[in-house]
Length: 419
Image (cartoon, rainbow, N blue to C red; front, side, top):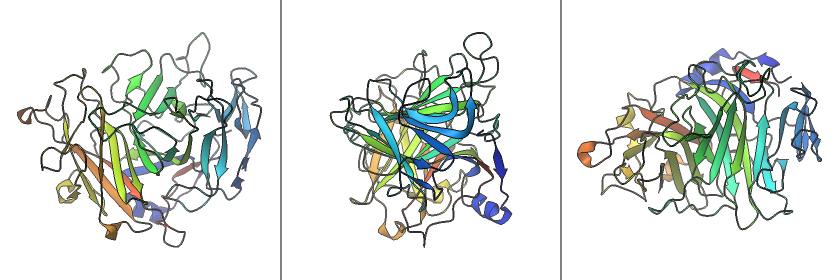
């Protein structure tokens, strides 16, 4: 079972890590850093080309798992998501890894060419919620992963007609007694506990995605109805047990994505998870360009009056609420407010915020961790729809790809799951 854990205590490494990040490392979910991974070969997991689960989809099942809720639900498993009539497969790609690691592989999900829907999608299932497995608790508030999509249409993020959400990260929560139907518990979804984190991204680069507890939508809910930590008093990540990652819209040609280093964290400072949510940052080394994006969830209604303004800073040192003003402000290419270096949400009717920028070559050194902080500086006096809902920042970082010789030490493993 996936709830078998090994507790690895590295005191000196842990202290060093806590001094260099705004997040306390909690647990790895999937990182594919085992040396025994390649193609469909994955130590401890078996590949089923014809399914062997209730979805009849290709994928992997964990060898030490078990049938749950009937003889067709083997858990844990990760496999194809077939909602749109598409045909996907996957492999462990040893030639493509997140920039933060130089070992193992990443998971590549790709169109098989059998259908013409072209939406790469994949499910990730655990048998019980993360809290019951000891890999999250009531403080866990971040889910981090590196993600590289390819083949998606330009979301027009450099225009005021910014397309809405070309990537979905869908989550499911479960707990005893909370599920649909009498007597159903995990892994069956608790009543109404399906949420969506939306991303609006450009492709062909590794993005670091850092999700908080403030999704953009709940199935069946109206706009503005989803709050931070929406299952409260139950903690969002503590009661999560499954998710999917998908290219949302049908594309005109085959798509693929790579995902790597999926981890859970707990913030060690208060951050703005209201108007700065579902954050990502990416670097395109071939063009030496950076992009950053997020969603503004602070308005209950989006219209011509729902405007907001943000400032983004960077540093090679940790940025906190206290030292934020000491970090350097980016110079945005798109959506700048005059010459302030602040940016506006490009479409007041939609939640995505996005810009492109460059950074000094001197800090884009292999192995360097670059820290970013976003601050909502909205003010009614300056024409915004309301004052900033929080004075706190929201942080994310990015590791420049490096060889094993100069790669930063990996975050210490406080609790490591098997697998």
